[in-house]
Length: 237
Image (spheres, rainbow, N blue to C red):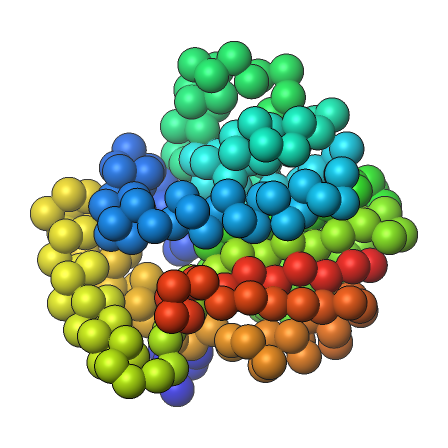
């Protein structure tokens, strides 16, 4: 039911993230109590074992994940792609301040119709962005298309805990605390009402594994973080 009520049109999602871009990083780390940093490092290190040289970071947002990959994997180049110019503007400033402008570049892209040629990248990543895809299957097929044969897909996504009492506690946190803090900090309550709704509508664990395989990937593995609040998926073309 939730999937039917969520408006994931690219224009709408782009405007929403443009509006919260200035406070997005601060709010993200605040809402996760900083635990998301550990999730990201674990995921990046898993990908780093594959030693990718050219990486496409889909739904890159403000570039946090791209910067972490640049620091820990040290690839030749990372292209951050996103539909929100507001988020990427923040990202460009962060990358410039960190002296990573030669390693990371940003490009406005519709992730369901990427402009890159087939087989352009050694790895395609998406940290906390694929749940915003209007068509998940199409987005995954595009990510596979731009991967080189033998390349890797890495997805890290927010998910809803399934077991008592974390399921009940997280529901309360997501539906009461998130919108309240979001409204106070970003002055955009709707964005942080959309967040838990998009999490609950998103396929998880075995279901997501099946969807990734359906898009043509193999060797799919996944790992839950912190009682299932976040999940990492790693697969191969």
